[in-house]
Amino acid sequence: MLTLSLHPDSNTTDFTNPSYFILLGIPGLEAAHVWISIPFCAMYAIAVLGNFIILLVVRVELRLHAPMYYFLCMLAVSDLIVSTSIMPKMLSIFWFNSREIYFSACLTQLYFFACFTVMESGILVALALDRYVAICDPLRHSTILTNSVVAKIGLALLLRAILLTLPLPVLARRWPYCSTNVIAHTYCEHIAVVKLACTDISMSNYYGFLVLFLVSCPDVSFITFSYFKILRAIFSLPTKDARRKTFGTCSSHLFVFLTFIMPAFFSFLTHRFGQNVPLHFHIITANMHLLVPPMLNPIIYGVRTKQIWDRLFLLFTHKSS
Image (cartoon, helix red, strand yellow):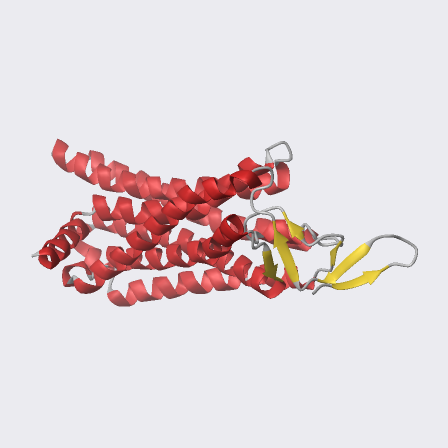
């Protein structure tokens, strides 16, 4: 139930303490929700299966107990949490028209999505660091990236994500919500929620920009610097085959980062400046940001990483025999 208050001198209804929000899904494409759910569900299933396979293979194969694969496991867990925090509710909207989401559940979804998106960005930086050390200083790789250092990096990335994103739902809970509790989206994206508040939300807006700045600027800068140094090292390799193989591995890592960061930037900026962007196009793009990277990460890293592919092949051939 909603807590309502009617002003005696107006017809305005205030939802000062909404007990739930209503998610519309993809406005304008309601008739196609079931059809849209098919590729979305397929991508989610591939993401869940692929990331669980990565976790299983790394766990059972002792040769994969190395920094790069630990970071891949962190990425897999982050992907699973991001996509699973969104997809079950989204599919219930598409399949059963179940649009209500409790206020506290909405803020929880908002937080987990934001927190583990920031976490994923940091893990991609850690993977770039691993590739940088492995290619530019291979003899010291095992002494620089020890298990202890990897664990500390993972903990630091988690703390950064938790502390940076915690004010987002805290601020959102403070605002009074007016006139409507309808969110024109498939999930509780931060700015889509706070836009419903009937007060000045400048603090939420400014803090959202601050989080974007504190995450994207250092992460993009470090990855750009790392791959610049990596490319220089690659072109100094003695043989063409070595250059091709190393460049192939690094280009796949860079592609993963671009598929993650570009839709995120588009969605963030469209909410604030893209009034002329069709709403359904914006929402579909925002959903791609949730589904495409978690689906592609295990495919790219699994297929392009020979050790994972070989171990996976052995697991299946052993079971079939």
